[in-house]
Length: 418
Image 1: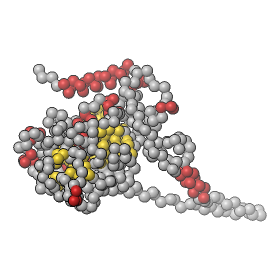
Image 2 (image 1 turned 180 degrees about the horizontal axis):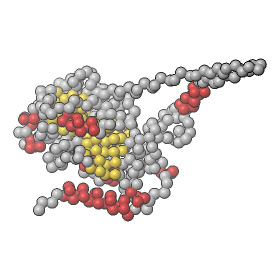
Image 3 (image 1 turned 90 degrees about the vertical axis):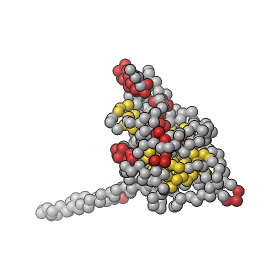
């Protein structure tokens, strides 16, 4: 009889969570809720003490005011440094009280709103006195205010106006190798990305401070990545993951977020990299800016060769040594080819499916730290679209790698964009 170790691990996980919930109801509220549907494995940290629900209080956000905890809480949490505060009294994370704006204390912006309201006049009944015959009461009514205009749609696809220009030399190099611009203006196949050039690039950091995966921002609350980035983590490790946005250097980060909810494709297979896709819902929406903005999503397509003979850009931070990432975000232009060309590859040809994206390059290779990151193309000016997710990658950065074709999963993605 064949016994699947992965099934055993899943059964064990559900058994432990159930046992803890039954034996200690108080502690169950601090455990993430793990469910499975036909489409996804869903891990919900909202309200569990791991990540703050959007527009609600996280008891771990300010430990000094946290209520007494149950006697058994098996999942510790790693804390990040406080975020930068704005001068107008609102915390950097809109929706959560900050030091300069404690809960229940109106900010300067709220006082301004109240002052405006005080200046508004509402018609009141006017009583006019008369001799013996009462005159009719005159009233004025305020016209109903027009319905507020819907919030404008968030612009996606910000980035370079056109494909970056490359003068390739013939040197083999990895996307995440430490490289520099050559003297005389010539560039290698891999170059340093300009500051804020790719605002949808996301980096994942674990509780030990290691940048272990990449991802793509696809809305102000959703991040797209490879399932393998999260599938091998324990619930404890997941709770310690921090998502970094607007990163331009090792210590230059625009904002950070935590995981509120995670969706891993239910048919993900670690043995052959099938359905290597996942979505994270952030604990708080990111603030869209020049340095942080989502990529566009492609139109759904079942054509495995829809991008054949086109160009794409791959991005990455990692190196062959995941503990020593590049000091700069790196970019490289690659060719996209028909899947039939990749099926003959000795490294990953056996993993190619109709849901794969095939990249051809003799110079550019992704590394371990690049897993989950975006493969993007430019169907129209200013609309950079995430068409692939870095999936299979050799540890020594010597293979082009296998990409998950995003258009094949557009219907799946749309389910969790609502």
